[in-house]
Image 1 (spheres, rainbow, N blue to C red):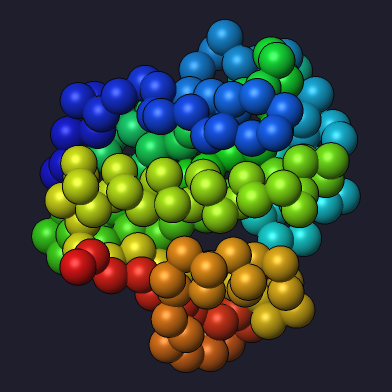
Image 2 (image 1 turned 45 degrees about the vertical axis):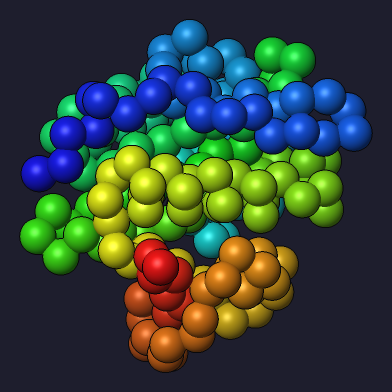
Length: 183
């Protein structure tokens, strides 16, 4: 098992024209910001990631945060939020960590008004660096629905290579498999 408790609670900020966006490990202190972001983003996020990672009520948000904290404690996954001026702009996640093969999934979501500003590529690059340099992973995988053109562009931009077509992989829908490997 990879000890995720030793990883930083904050990653280097992402510089934007509107100022720095902090990258903070998810915690209960983010409940209100994440809930508000989920409310603004659910129609945009749920088709790709389901409701569990984009909560829209305070109770669901608390449950989401607790589940993600438990995932970190058990070595299953690690979640960071993009925070700017106390607003949650989105989430980046490394999960399904395989401790033997040293691989994991990489995912993210952004609220609609944060899209198109390079934040998706930036959080994925930040998490890729964390995965390879600090966690000792060798491979990250992204499962993307074929019609999610924005995520396909992000994945290719960060070095993802298309490996295949997986039938019924995301909520019973088909997905493309992209991999990113360490150098």
